Length: 77
Image (tube, rainbow, N blue to C red; front, side, top):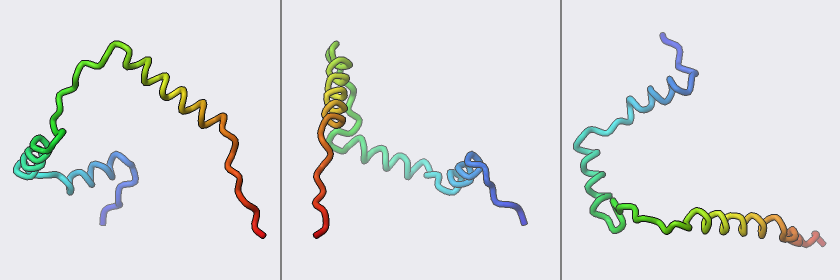
């Protein structure tokens, strides 16, 4: 009897060998995704300020999360 693999790469390789779609199944899934609303949307050209806008929103969220006082938890009576 062979030893079961313990290496993550070996485990993933063994799993993938059992989970592979055939070409017909893959084509059917792809067609459903492309036909769905929003499927296969081509990326648009974002504005030149997209990175600065994203960074500003992330920074504001981090600042808000770290400066709010902790929630008040009522003590049991």
